[in-house]
Every structure is written in structure tokens, then in C-alpha cells.
Amino acid sequence: MAVSTLTPAIVTPNPNYQAFRPKPTSATFRVTALASSNSLNSTTLISKKQICQVGLGLLAASVVSSTPLDANATRIEYYATTADPPCEFSYARSGLGYCDIAVGSGPEAPRGELINVHYTARFDDGIVFDSSYKRGRPLTMRIGVGKVIKGLDQGILGGEGVPPMQVGGKRKLQIPPRLAYGPEPAGCFSGDCNIPGNATLIYDVKFVDIYKGNRK
Image (cartoon, rainbow, N blue to C red; front, top):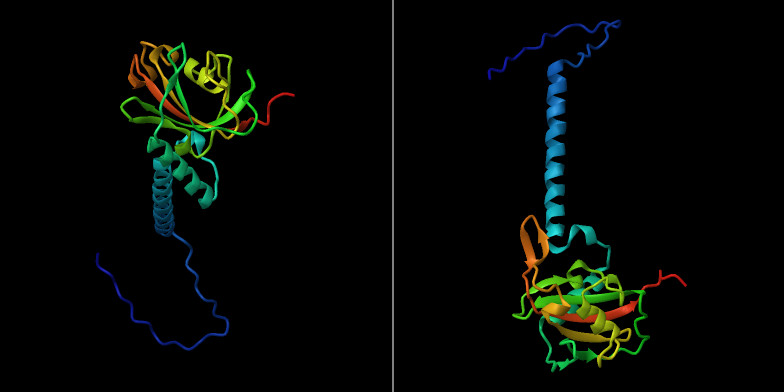
């Protein structure tokens, strides 16, 4: 685009002279708007990139604030569950396999009440399909009233020879299909299912505490 140049003339200052201030034109507004739009788009792109980076590590519905120390401790616990510590299962009459990695010293889980647990869930070939550790907070669940799969109810609450878990305890559960999701696939969305039918599931469960919001 050609740029015209003007040679300023030398004139004698007039005491009544007022400096000419050009009014903003439509072109001025277009340039200003374009600059603002570019700045906003850059900010938006940066924000989206940052959100995307956070989203890769967390489920959006479960984002919580935590200190770096808490986050590191959570990651360490998660990798401890995936490391598959040695454990020899005992089996209940129902077919549930269980063994204690660490026996808790707190109260037992009260039937029908809400409790907080951390867990890592995998298939029997070792592939992890879900974990509360990766979400950064424990799962709050109602125990003993059919709100979770039967293997978790029995594995945490106890029964048929399985001792009840206590707060602070860590237990590994081997849950056969009839105590899990049975012959039907589960965790399905838009035709894709997270858990195939007749899957045997392995859960590493940590009984964190009894939910403090339970009715007295």
C-alpha cells in the first residue's frame, strides 16, 4: 500500500490557535477493534490451552484444589496400587477374593451410611479402568444397601467370612462377574463400554473415613 508523506510548513504561532484533534473515524474503530479482538483471541487460546493441559490429568467434574504436597502424596498412593503389592487371596462362599494390605485401626463401616474410600479398579489382566486417586479425592459412597456392586458392599462391610474393613485399612478385592456387573457391559456411553460383560474386577480399596455429613 502506498504511503503519502507530507512536508510540514513553518508558520508563526497564533495565540488564538487551538490544536487540531482529529475525530476518530470508522477506520480507527476498525483498527482498535481488530487489535482488541486479536488480544482477546490470544488470551482465549492461552486459556484454552491451559484448561486442556489441566483436563488431561483430571476429570472435569472432579477438579479440586490441593497443595502440591497433597497432589504428590495422592500420586504416590495411586502408583502404589498399580504396583500390585503381593497378596494371597482368601475366598468367601460368594466367590469374593480378599486380602488385607494394611488392617485399619479405626471404626468399622456402618451399614447404610456414607463413607469415603480411595480405590483403583482394574481388570484381571492388570489394566486400570478407574481410580479415585487420579481424580484427586476419595469417593463418597453409601455402603451395604445396594448402591454399589455387591463385591464392594461385601468386601468393605464384611460378611460370609469376610471381616469388615476399619478406617485406615487397605484391602485388595477380586470380584467375580456375578458380584460385579454380570454378563452385560457397563460404563457405556455413545455405544462404547468401559467394562465388558463377564469381567472379573480387581479393586484396591483404602477406607479413608466415615463421611461427616451423615445424619445423626
